[in-house]
Length: 110
Image (cartoon, helix red, strand yellow):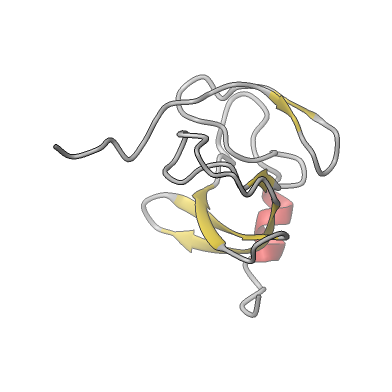
């Protein structure tokens, strides 16, 4: 039997990096702060909250994607794992900081 690879977990949170209150997106899992783009390394598969690392995932780069908009590349401060997350720059509630995403597109070495 195949296990689900995505669990909807659209809860609000207080960002561990910048301290801002982050509201739920309302349509999918919110997994990073729209203000500083940081996240927590808490998922093995999106939304499952089963990873014990808990380190801060810092946005280190962004890649334009013709179908998904932008993909944010995060690197964990604690374990060094690199993960990709879809940006929510077009969200109606607290859209991601598009200026910061665009600046990150220039970064290729992380």
